[in-house]
Image (cartoon, rainbow, N blue to C red; front, side, top):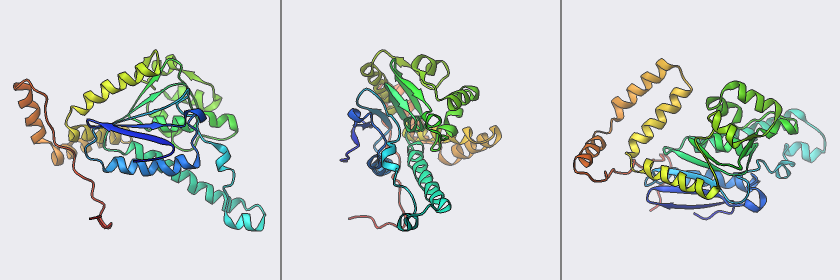
Length: 287
């Protein structure tokens, strides 16, 4: 895979997606939004992957939207007549917001866990991106900011929906209403990140270590765990329990369970088959 806004590499079942515009604070440009869903679609199809690391280069994880690239949004009719049409412009912006939301949801919907490493600023859309990951880590210089309120708007592509699932609601409301920065120690205290490291380098080493541990588990068991956790987060306890029972009844990985027990008895590392390929029906498979 070759992209302008991202670098991507994989090794031993671990993918690593890197925002590579550190000199520009990894702003979310139009090119970023064009490439993100495409690279996530490729990652989704790679059944050899067991876990994905998400990180960035430079001083800041992500400075959020590059607003300069979104200043031309509006209906073609409005541009042609050079007159305001609030309804048509609003409909365009609605569709844009929905598309950007779906692009970030692709990260959350991956069958593998996503581990996100954050250094420096995680601002606006950067926080939308980070909250779509399964687990977050930070270097001690990290800070988080719901920047949208500071530019006269409500956050609209994921933070207000996902952050309350991780952080106490009172804290979310404080951050969303004030737009203040929450630094690494506070983010650890409230549960947004799992661990704070002295440097980005040490953070990435720690993430790699956890990724290797996850990658050693049954990929179907990990996927099932993620699916049940995500479903249960958005439903009642009873609905979550029923979904869990249905999942186990339909997809209990008996071969993987046998391999796990056998490898323990033989004092060796288990060897699990890759998860099944996702088949896209209705599309012609290339020869």
